[in-house]
Length: 364
Ligand code: 5AD
Ligand code: SF4
Ligand code: FES
Image (tube, rainbow, N blue to C red; front, side, top):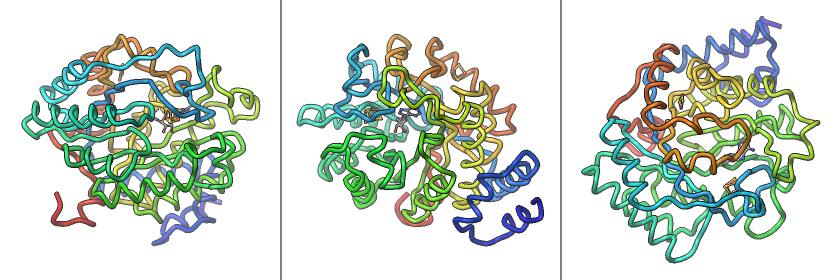
């Protein structure tokens, strides 16, 4: 078996059967995969880990994804929206601590007032930080005009996970209606690219009914769509969601975690110069989850800057870490963790995807 894996790891281009084998690798072979991924990372993106201070702006959401704890249909969920000043204060913390960038994330909403409010928030953050803070948005599917307004206000990266790249599986995890449409989501990724954003996407790993072949296709999807940055992590069940009924068909959590690590390693080998996040969901399963992800190819971490009083209300899944810690505690904790994982922190840098820069040489 090892010879087989060695041979695959020497190939110039990985194809679906190769990825399936790598994702199925056992203990010994896994080591080879991880070593190769680390070598690719060091050679192509270096040791630096970049911060994106995460501000979970609001848990209001108009959608009803079956897996998510803050879906509109979860009436048990207490709802909040942080004030503009609270967001600005969190962004100021990021700027003063030289985090380089912030991510503004919330459930998906639309409407004239909402769009205008985000636009003004982005402009105020830009202004406050003298243009220095990079701004990533993670606010779901919007119209081209909205994407453009937010881009013109100063946001330059956008995260929109495809969640699952197999269109046949999409309805398993989402209601079948106009607001949860696979093709519309794909179209949104194109629009983001067209407007000029660096585009991030991602998937969940270890969903019920998802196969290793599906996961290999997820990786090839990122390649095919020339994605600049990826955030992916294990699916973690949440008791107040429709998908909880499948909890007995899931892989054990540790296996979902191990599969996620292999996904990160394979992606680093497949798309050598993109940004890959060590996601919070990985740490929800393994206390050292994000460090392990850094060691096998991830180069982005999102320290939580959401005001502590709101953190308990942004529980997309169970056991989400850092809900009792404040920004200062997470900062100290992460610094130690990244150094332990052999990384360096790219303080004060945007840490844009090298992949994007290559595609748009004059743009950054
Ligand atoms: N487990 C893991 N990730 C989840 N997300 C939502 N619900 C869950 C869950 N139960 C992820 C989705 C979404 C991101 C913000 O959080 O991929 O895009
Ligand atoms: Fe809303 Fe996003 Fe959760 Fe779906 S995953 S219900 S769009 S917050
Ligand atoms: Fe938040 Fe460790 S990163 S407590």
